[in-house]
Image 1 (spheres, rainbow, N blue to C red):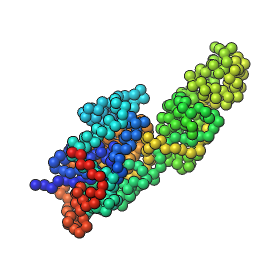
Image 2: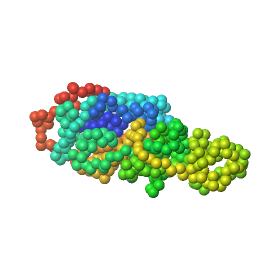
Image 3: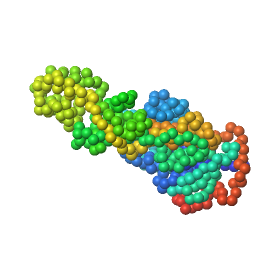
Image 4: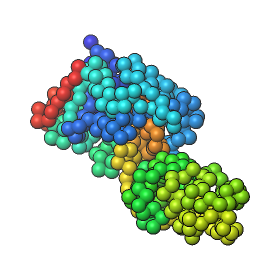
Length: 446
């Protein structure tokens, strides 16, 4: 009887669980899949994402269009999305009695609006596939055996285990052991910087307006960085989808500037300054006796409109008929091109994403296998791939996890040479029952 293939997944997030489930289902009785999560809380990010609702994916079903939502990794993911895309994700969860819904902006959530629905589904699927889930126990080191025969892993409690296939799905946290292990196995780690973050702005224009949201276009002068969409005024500056997308595309540029840079905001997109001015002139003609504070032609929140009038030097109780061309020009400039100074950033905690990670050129995106170390695979944000906000980072996790899981279960293309070291060598312990494992909480969810 052929020996079971032992597969170890390091990382208990979305990508790690999806890969482990996919691999275990494909291997069946021919394999043994163990997932190690260093913390006591697997799927923690799934549980807090989307404000506790879990933005599972995005209703973008064209692989080419989907790939354009990734500042880094879109080209490599294009082929991958032809094999597993949002429609497949939706069908996978539907097949496990988790219905999803599409919101007006394309984001997809479970109908329950509860992230626990997704987390529980993954845990139940892992149990059904006989994945061994080991929590509160991480992996400290990995040593590749000669000839692609597998790996010896040293756990954080000192125990050692062996496997034939190894997946790193440890996320983008720079403190993660995944990057240390990948580098030790020959991989280059692209510098890590935040990808989704909000802007710190200390400007009188925004003081007292926290909580207001409005469509806007934000841009960084002197660069090609510009994004349109909802913008949220916060206690510390600006947030919202447009700001988060801008931060993703500009992750490296803005890091190089130490997060201090000018930002222009157009509060009346898609109009430019000339179009805004024309609208203001028309407003003066249509409603000459109306007060400026009660005559916003752009549908802005009232408090924001009053603040923009003040910034342009226009009294709120002034009648439109009394506003000359110079006053309208100043107001048009404020509405269409307010310049603010960003002086720092805050990580968008619910969607923490990192730019950087394992260099993409060193990974075969058909199988997510290392080009440097046979038998080593990757999934999720440990790779130098990241998407904009809106469910795209979860979709990358599902796609890379599924492809890696399938590949780890596939038969070897050729017989692999065996390790020269005996599995029973002194100090070596095999399998999920390795010595020291009893000191962690092991849930073998079958």
